[in-house]
Image 1 (cartoon, one colour):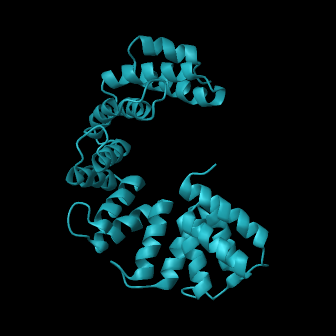
Image 2 (image 1 turned 90 degrees about the vertical axis):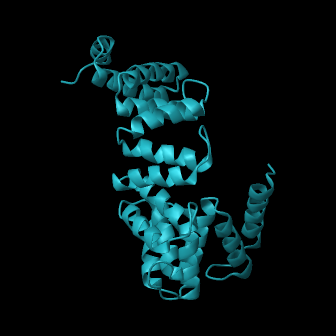
Length: 274
């Protein structure tokens, strides 16, 4: 029989770090189920206790609450401080998030080399987000000359862990032959995995392959399905392609009314009209 919150909290008050982390988790997740801000304040308190005691997971969770203003006012500097404390203990998620802060210059001085350093540590510790972010840095040469081969290597590792951004970006490298031998079939494979995982850009890219017959048999109807799915995620290019086929009746019946609706959606997205 599992322990009650009261039993965990009793141990937490006695300085048990595992209990402090457990109580913090229980309050944090209960806050979303019950929609009570005061529970986030309690999770912040207990994560803070565990963080001060040196627990890397509590340090990460405390940083996350500070970063996103959960149970407290947002404080990106405190978030950076606690991510760093957890990152030096080799917590992969903290290494990735610290890398992101250095990439964006939030809470720290922007430094792409340090972003690559922390993303690299996270990637080597097996974190899919860290692997994907490191690949992005290599693909676009944020810390020097672009290196598509390294980008492809890290995208592959992240993609194999079901990171949909990595799957889509790896598909793009195969489609364009950057860092890998050009292979439309392989591009379609990775685009499909990402699209089935809900990624809007990948659904659009897969739709284009079906429309052109690259790596898959040309199929306007399947192209229409994927453009539709991309549009429904709010992806701009997916919306544009869906409008085009609705207006021309390519792969699905022509529907000017639906096209007009999606044009309004696109206009609102681009111009911020509501």
